[in-house]
Image (cartoon, rainbow, N blue to C red):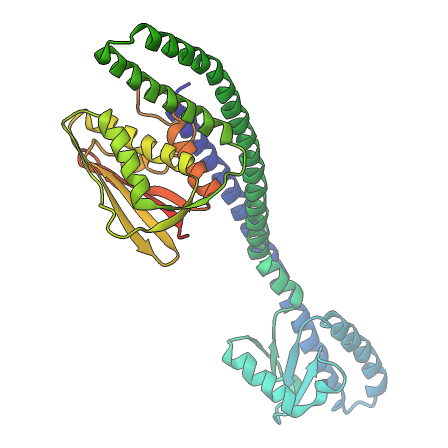
Length: 396
């Protein structure tokens, strides 16, 4: 399966899961709104029953028939039941004379005129519900119960909990996946270094034999010397692979000097039509790095640039100081990276070449960010104009 297909399917799964989560939240919100509406109707009915009980109690005290006492006992029971129903609903009643009485605030505050007047004003200012009655309950101001508020806030709480759960799950699984990937990378790299050791040793033996046979032939010996340089390079590559998974030793190195070494090595192996524009070492700037691993990163970026330019163009480097870090911009005039690919270039397996594993930039990212605690990213890129990668390392 092509790497692009893998990333495409991964992206589609993320969209599907996000849509499922959104549907769950919407269903919860709709159901919560339904429950809140029913609860509001129920609370309004309780308040109206309370108003009726208070009104009847007030009217019974003015009954001229002499049967007030027995009638009052029935009304008192009705009022007690209504007050019990309203135990969770804050209510303020206003009589025709302007006197206030509360329910649900406690024995002392239920008759505290100053407190109740404050609550009444708060109800009016916030547009709380008002029911009109008669007598002592001419106006009844009431608020929603705590249960109603909890139901209305439930979708928000659910969204926050779901977000926290997803975030925690993402962190845990990402950490687990990175740890597993690191073990795979380290194992593969060490095995590669081990496998390189045998042919390198054999090549060194053959070179020694050639050197003996070509004594007195300086032109041929010059070729042997170049072979020795390339074998030395192979040994360096094997050494780099052997260090993957181990904590590398960081040293204080002049960044200008190190970039110049990479330039010299790569320029000899590039087309004569490729121009290298690297900064001169006027004053040394020291950064914390592992030389072998950093060389690997820079050479990998330069090789990618050479492939992107097709044997003709310019590769340049710019060094900038940024607070406690040094930024190195490596640019080329190649074919560039499409915008939709710039976030995936560092993922394992991503490559635009017909051959290759697509591991170079992924390894470069691990070397810079995991081992050097720095940063590496695509600063900018335009199709058919070129690309700039930025590496940031800590100052020594």
